[in-house]
Amino acid sequence: MRTKYAAWVILGILGSFLFGEPAQAGKKKQPDLSKLPPASDRKDLTYDKDIRPIFEASCFKCHGPEKHKGKLRLDNLPDAVKGSEDGKVILPGDGAHSPLVINIAHAGDEDDFMPPPKKGQPLTPEQIGLVRAWIDQGAK
Image (cartoon, rainbow, N blue to C red; front, side, top):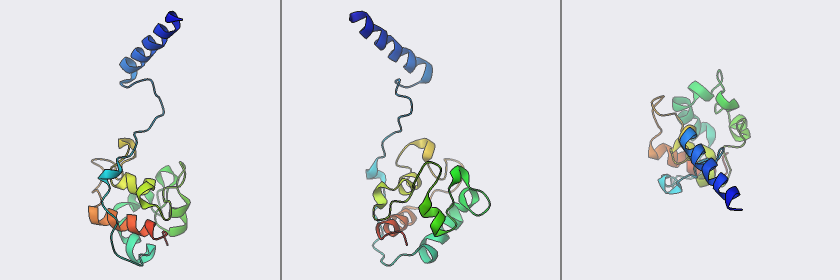
């Protein structure tokens, strides 16, 4: 019995040494929701009037009409709500747990930060707060 346990410990250590992390492949860092800016207190936010201009300035280069990284399009409401190849990024009514908000706020896994570090201007806390409030209000 001790031999089996020792083998697992050795495999864990080897995994840490070889891959730079404990042998928990596929696990993403849990988002730190305390890093999220508060939702804006603006009411009646809409995609076309309030959110599309933010996405157009910061996101369309990779997620617009011509390019769809990760199969995510943010240039129109139906596609944005549909999500990406990894699933929904907008959870209407729940901005704080929406992957889009977590990623633009750089609050989760670094591999998912949007825009990626050194690849674009990050959104301001005010812009993130508007996106979060828009999602909280139903993402319409």
